[in-house]
Image (cartoon, rainbow, N blue to C red):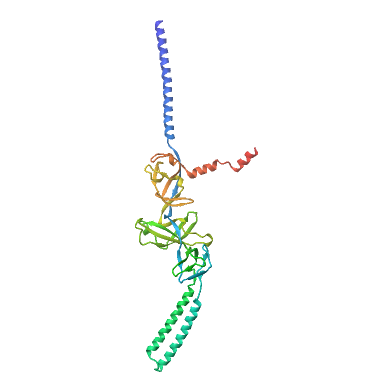
Length: 380
C-alpha cells in the first residue's frame, strides 16, 4: 500500500514537472519573439524616410555676378565760348534735347556791325590786292608791295571769320542727343568765355559699370554678351564695351562696362544699383530649389544626396546663377539622387529609406477620387 502511494506521488511530481517545463518554455519563446520583434522595429524606425529626386546635370553657363550701377554713356558741361548777356533761355532743365537744339542765346549787341565792317574790309583789301597784282605784272609795283597787299587781305579775311565764329557762339547748342541735366544761367546773366552754361547727359545707350576681381579678368572678352538685373527687376541685355587695362591699387579690381539700349518710354536713369552678370564659360550644373541647400558641420554650403547603398552623402556646391525658377549650382556628379525633403533630419553616412519624388506624385494622384466616384458620392 505504501509502495503504491509513493508511486502515485512520483507520477504526480513528474507530470507537474513536465507541465511546468512546457509552460516555461512557451513563456521564454514568447519573450524572445517580442524582443526580436522590438529590435527589428527599432532598427527600422531609426531609418528616416526621405524624398529623393534623381537628376542629370545640364550644360549651363558659368556666370560671374558683380554689383555695380548704371552710368551715362557720356556727359558734357557746356561752357560759353564768347562773352555777353544771356538774352534767351529756350530749353529748361529736365528736357530731352536733340543734337543742334539751341539751349540759350547771348545778346548780339554790336556784332552785326562788326560783321559788316569785316566784310567791307575784306572787299577793300581784295580790290587793293588785285590792283597791286596788275601793277606788279607791268613792273609798276614791286613784289614786296604785292606781298604786303596779300598779307593785308588775309588778315581782313581772318577778322571776318573771327566775327562769324563769335556770332555763331552766341547760340549755345546741344552737341548730341541727350538729357538737359541742369542749367547754370538765367536770362539777364552776364557770362564770360569759359563760364558754365548747362550739363547734358547722354543716356542712350545706358552703361552698367562694375569692378571685377583680378582672378577673373582674363575670362572676360570685349564685345561678349552680358546681362544686368536692376534693383527694380528690369533686365538689360547688352555687350561688354570696355575692360580696364590697369587695376585699382586699393582693391586690385578692374573696371568693366556693359552697354545696353535705353528705351525712351521706360528711361533708365543714372545711379541705379544693378547686378552685372558675365559668362566665363560653360559647365555641368543643376537647377534646384534654394530650400534644399544645407550646411555641413564646418559651415560649408552644400546639398545632401543618397548613394547606391542608400547612405547620405554631402556635396559642397558653388552657386552659378539665381533665377526666378531656382538656383543653378555645380559640385554634384553627372547623376545624383538629391534629397529634396527630409535633409534636415539625416546626417552624413546615415542609411535612409528613400521615396522617389515621381513615385510620391503618382501616389498622390492615385489617392485622388476619380470623377465617377465623385459623382456617385454626390448622388448619395
